[in-house]
Image 1 (cartoon, rainbow, N blue to C red):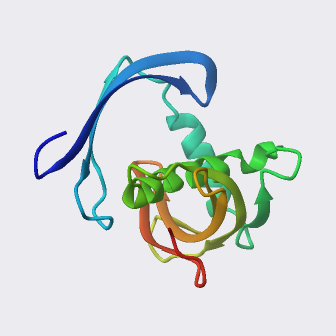
Image 2: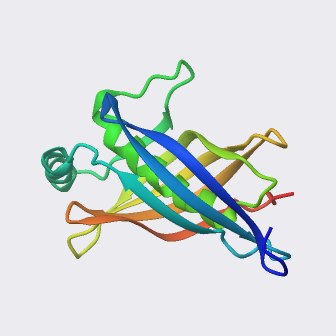
Amino acid sequence: DIEDVGHKYYLELELEDVLDKGRTVNCTAEVLYHLGSKSTAPDVQLTVQGELRGTEEADQEFYNRIRSLEKELVAENIPDSHGNVPLELEPIHLLAWAASGYVIWQNSTENTEFHLAQVKHVKQVKRSDEDLQFDYVLLLHEMVSQEVIPWEVTVLWHPQHPARVSWDRRQLGHTLG
């Protein structure tokens, strides 16, 4: 506890590379949840010891494939009811996973535990610039309440930049807590 500020946690984690399942790196994190304000994201300081595999080549292939589509990509229910993610949609699922991490961070409290359950819907939106844009409806499972919350998220991405959540909101009619 930090008096009049909040609660600070020190974590030691082992991260698994989602693209190279046997590869892990150690990391430490300090997480500070501020007192009284549920609208303030926790402060997170992260240190990673080691490196995860680079994805530059796969990122560029995915980017080129999506840019060359004649019709915008549209998909639903990733993973499906059996937990399967079609290989060609794996990058879409990974972008959703990264975006959900941002949404979870921005909306976490000490009393919540969110997980990405499913991409309910995703639609590519054509843009005039070089970014790819995907409009998602993500289903976030809040483990404490067992509520599944639809969350609308717009993700911008280019292989030379990290994924960016440009807009997000809980779907109307769904509130937290």
